[in-house]
Image (tube, rainbow, N blue to C red):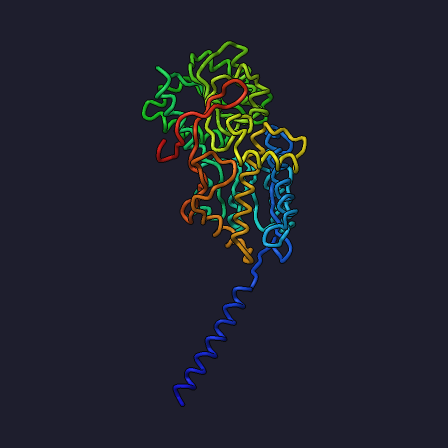
Length: 407
């Protein structure tokens, strides 16, 4: 009798436990910016100002969430994407981000653009414990989870990219004398530090001249003249699109013909190389991690076809030669996967937990052999690039996919 009673109680306990687990499983958890029907994402970018060429990224992201919502949203929730103009001015970034966090009460910030802009809000976001996810800058500081557990980058970091350029120069240019144009902020300094590391102990001897500019400067023409006069036979162009294009054009005007290396952030054919003049851009080397829409090698590629179809529907009339739209599409896909993994637990902590838990995820439009991997101790989603050289009116990939370890 006792045995059967124990058996009965055991069964009852099991039923109660099962019911409890079902209840726990069904329980929804929300922080600011999430509800049964909506997920609020905050964003700011330079729709005006010296870096306004990047404004199309925000437009592309906005279109992406519209397409997600039309398809049913994320786990039946519609995404409300709130994007504001900060003009690439850090003080303005602080102002609009406070609005997004404290007034609009977004679940997280997504793909805020610019090294100085994100630097200005990083401590604030971490104090508030609101995710600052997949920032649109490759500064190496965005991969430090111990110091800043609420901030994560997306693209390959500038430091690693610059190391790769330096090693390529050492291997391919006889007796290099490097002239460097550098944006005078954390963006420029991160590239410079990586470049010096790549050059090694002879860095100071190999750098013939370093000149800087401010984002408020009208032109960089005088700086390019200084680099030529210094006898540089290599030009490392650490500039955002407007100034990168000016530099390439001015070098041609003064008949300076160095081996040219340019940062990935200014690799857009339509917003940099076309304004600079295709004839002036021949042979420039840069790093790539995304498929370039002007490269005919991808004409029959399934991902490129899908992207073009998406652009035709959601951004009709937009310039499909602008690689910034490819960037917007790829980073938005990663954010979508992150939110999907959160399920019904849309809290700040769970968003970061899921963002730090990808293993070799294939993101559309990344180059073959490049995937996204993260962990609680690894906040660098993409750590590989492939070099490419400008030829004709497009980029031509060469060599192997390289990473920090293989650089």
